[in-house]
Image (cartoon, rainbow, N blue to C red):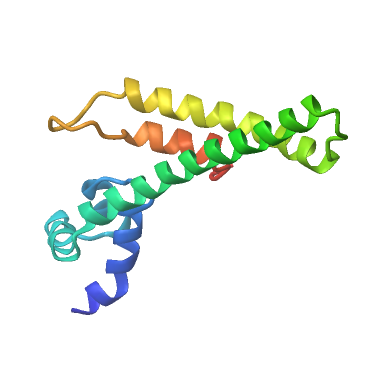
Amino acid sequence: MAKKAMYSEEAERRYVVDQMTIAEIASRLSLSEKTVWTWKEEGEWDKKRRQHLEQKEAFHQELYAFARALLRGITEDMAAGEKVDTGRLYTLTRLLPMLVKVKDFEDAIKTAEPKEGKARITEDVVKLIEREVLGLGE
């Protein structure tokens, strides 16, 4: 039981957030794969992993909506002959490169091979997202 108290949360984080396989987690934490599989089933890690990925997708959708609303407001101000706030223009220019990365991410997801009959994100795609979109692992 002490093993579970020491390693279960770390193993879950690696599975859910880091998208590591059971074998990788077992190897890195010096645990048996059977132990990690048991924890995965008990803790419903697959469900948590799906929720984590859905939250990332929801963020991308919100980012697109925000950019569209910002651009629409700037365009309307310009069409009305009003001075456009430089802060909004700056925000838009900072947001555009992120949108390109998000689009690349979405394209990578669409081209990734589905596993087990379901469309899933491969580990390579997740690592690409973390590095390119979220700026992690640099």
